[in-house]
Image (cartoon, rainbow, N blue to C red; front, side):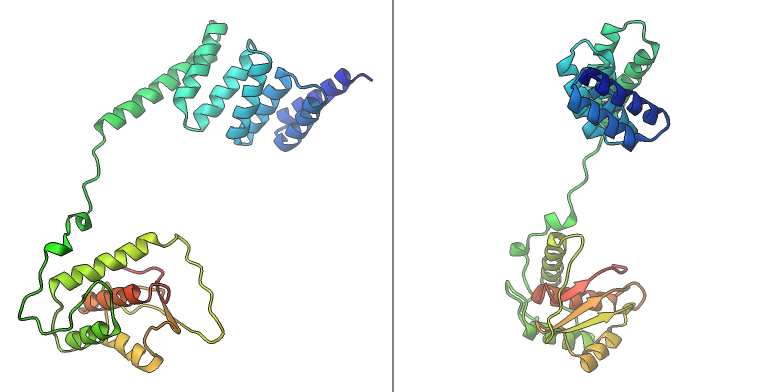
Length: 280
């Protein structure tokens, strides 16, 4: 049996698997055929199997190889166009559809695909033309350097870094119904926002043996309940991490105070104060 016959047999077996929907085995047979005799037909057939498997990148590679081996092989252009279109690369697909129609001007299906591709490109261009840019975030308009603290403010001063002294003073002010200076509120929120935005989507945490790790559920804006948790269980620190895994605001009348306290701790201990989810 000659190598050519063996390659052809593998190709035929691949065609049978392809027709039966057994795409992975079709790819194996086409690969064996390619190993024996790399031809445009074998590469294009394997590209078709990759398309069926939704492996569009591999389909593009195989179709491209088929075109390099035989620039006149129409099926290779057509299958690469399909793979490009499925990969949301309509302009690349358009080039190949045009090549197919040029080489096979009576191919109705190719003309339909070409028309669909052109319409899709026009729609994308229209949507891009009418697209309105997102307005700047409010945080981008805040200039802390231009903000001042009222001379009559009698609370602890906040510099460029959060301190335990400031947090304790903030807690005392909130307990007594007092407020923070507006500038400090913005400082805390912006600092926490910067930390949250720079964290990965999935935060992995390791807990050393000598380390405490507390998981809290919903606090629902109950500021004094949160203080009681800290009183009994200990405040966040480098040796005691907290994970707030529930709604920490959203109902109680002290939601702002809870948010600012947790954000302040997040600023002070970014690795030890974790907020996984919750109404915010």
